[in-house]
Image 1 (cartoon, rainbow, N blue to C red):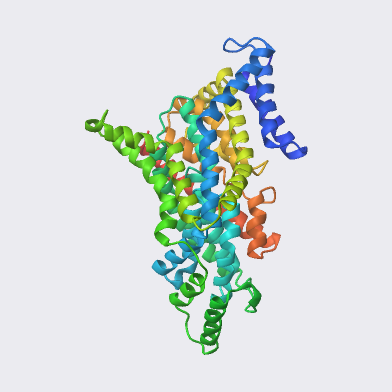
Image 2: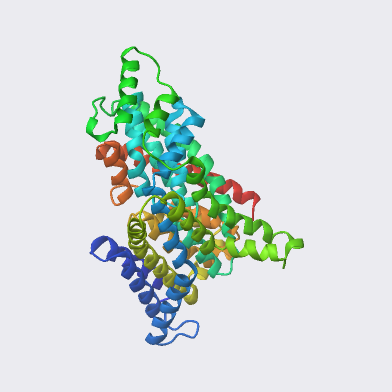
Length: 480
């Protein structure tokens, strides 16, 4: 039979062929890849039969499903409540009041940055693109500028901050390989790394916006799409523009607040409470004097991701969507479960692949070879992320597959597991182009043509991870 490394390469190539060249979904493609690697690498770690190969695949699938399936489902439901209730728009309005209309691009980006932690970036862009178009129409700023910063704000935290499924799966894979990655700390570190990435993207897309200044939403409006209260505000804004007066933050605030939205406190709380509970569990767990106390037990109970997200779901159902009838709320959750299903199965299939790669020893052999060749360990997750993403376009699949390869290597490569995990998540952003559904969402809802999007959005999806990779390389020199 083949060596474990060669068997792994054959299996990964087979997975890419199935996803790219056939009509096969990522879930069965990952399972077939895992089985193929196991069969080609036999015998290994007590597995010497075809039945044993299937057994290790199914056990890996079940282990991952146990640790992450409920969390992904709850996270999707939480995201739908934030989306449908108007909480995302309320957050945009609140940030607008704080930042001001002159920085409306930052308003959009920050809103996306926050919203994409539980909401899929595709859905988030669709929700918030209407605000971006409104800002473009009234401020005359290019949608390459505004749409790009909104898109990148959503994109960064989608890849870097749990409970988005991709980074959540990466954390789970590392934990299954014996690394004590604390989810609360990972969320904090992910946010901290995301901040400089976002700042870089603001300057980058401001440059692109000035390079392509003509893609502005026309001033004509379809009055049938606005409420009477919003039309009053729009007419007043139009009169100010005709008098060549500068628009103020209040103009936009009134336009957005004319729509019935939940309160700012409730909107932000529904999003931030589960993050606070998870982080509180991390903090209390570090205080030895609280160990074993009733308080620590309660914090630990509610700080588990399942319970933290359940609290958020209750807030969404009974507070954010309190005015909706029971059937509407149940239908929302049904839609969320429909969206969560494929993600859960793909994630668990990635766990099966990881179990096989770990059992065959392929990752260990590769890691030893990399160390012997003198290649800096931090470059390995950076390169693997791009290699996994480029051919097939799905960032989530790339994170899941890449973590299955990287996690067993980390101790041999001599890099900090947090840095390894986040570096992998970062570079699975790269690149977003024609084979990526999000590329088409950003392109179409921003009103860009394909060529302009390739020259701006796609380049941005390469430069932002490249900038972040430099940060991780520097961090790896000091953190081991």
